[in-house]
Amino acid sequence: EIQPHLCKTVMENFNKRMHMCQQSCGGHLLDML
Image (cartoon, rainbow, N blue to C red; front, side, top):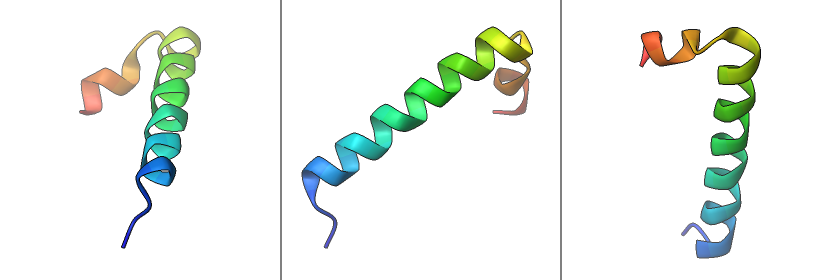
């Protein structure tokens, strides 16, 4: 069973990485999604 706080941390890290990639890659990641 996944701990709720762990899931929240993972989602926050994912969002942070997405935002950094958007800034550094010019949003190319969005084209893949």
